[in-house]
Amino acid sequence: MTPRQPARATTRPIRIRRIRVAGLLVAIAAFAAALGHQSLASSSPAAASPIDVLRNELRGLRREHRGALGEDDGAVPDGTTVFDAQVPGVANLDPALLDALRQAAADAADGGVEFFVDSGWRSPEYQERLLREAVSKYGSQEEAARWVATPDTSAHVSGAAVDIGPSDAAAWLSEHGAEHGMCQTYGNEPWHFELRPDAVDRGCPPMYADPTHDPRMQR
Ligand SMILES: [Zn+2]
Image (cartoon, rainbow, N blue to C red; front, top):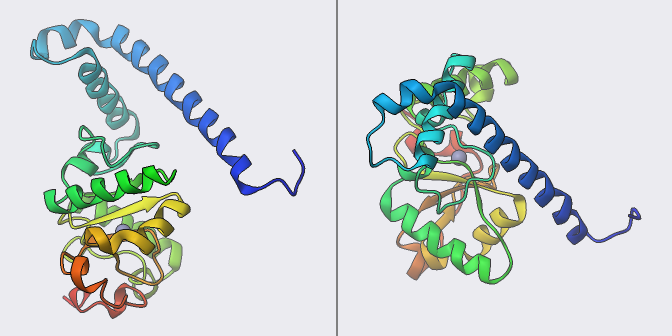
């Protein structure tokens, strides 16, 4: 590869990485299933598919090993799409927002742009942790507030906001989302979108420079 190769050439290694990650997860899942087979067999409902059983087992392992917050609190695994209804961070989004987002994603896919969900719905506990991390990263509550809302004010906690990646997908949604009622909310967060049904007819409202300018954050 030469340094001047077009950006398009970078999609291939990323895809390979995703496939490797998927392969690794399958291997981990098989190992977990072998470990937990006895207890699972007695506790799982007969209707659960093998994939659901493995997913639940993986969630249990994450919780146990990290002692922290996992998918059930809104942590979203790499490679999650807006169509992954089994991921709580996606499934717990406002149904109207999710519907609009999926229509937009289908539109974007027609143009060769693929959406991934970097973050969607979050539990209050998860939001609180993100806020604590932001305060430690940015050094003050005031600076952290430019990036991370409190559990009481975050649109992620109410299921009313989604963070879309990678950047070409976010750029596509910022440009074309209004047709579906999806609008970028903050100038400093090109990935953060909320549902604004009026945008279908009137276009998106002006963005706030950052969340500290958003009246909803003044609670
Ligand atoms: Zn966001």
